[in-house]
Image (cartoon, rainbow, N blue to C red; front, side, top):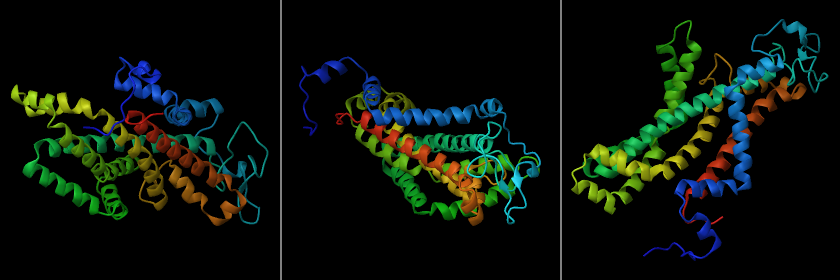
Length: 330
């Protein structure tokens, strides 16, 4: 017995999806979802900005290298060196399309582009590692059951009880100090942040996969594989894993925007990327009350970037979840 509504085999929708794979059906639903298409285009824009940050910067003639600050800012203006070019204080110029930073004269466009690259790189890498750990642990716990399930479920629950922010505040500085050398501190900060996000980001995926595997392990194709004497590894990765594509995609689509926001938030708190380019670091500098009042675009540019990226990823993740749900009718 099932609660899923029966569909008329002669209906237009039934004819459209007849003979199509679940992936093609999901892609078709996404293509007809206007919000999903718009969000996908926004995410694609940010991906292009991140991947091609260097060429785009060269196209506009900007870079992370800063000239003399006195060339770009007014150091005699009530003690606040405000940029003399770029709105709202100066005229628009293609030399610095998004203006320059107060006091330092750093180009806002170059720092925005490279900040986008750092944010997406860290979030994507952490999402991949956390998803791999979560999927493997969920597979083992759900399929093997018994003592293995109890032990792994205990570890899942234990990690869920640890406050993430407290753990990040504790671990990140230790990792940075332990592996710090004079020439790779920026890289160590990024690696440490990926480790922290991955260590405390896999539990939701593990729980989701465990529940799905518990449902699937009693199905006929799994029982048949057991009777045929297939090794456990083959059953897990050849029989069960392909049937878990939908929950894995859903988990990844929800995890990625969370990590983007966390990366910026941790950089703002001073435990993320502090030695290098980061949206969070730019926001931290821009929260100076005088900067916010006299030159608000310095704050709004990275902040709007984070909001647009996270919102688009969240809405796209919701659309993907609905498209992969066989009970959803759009």
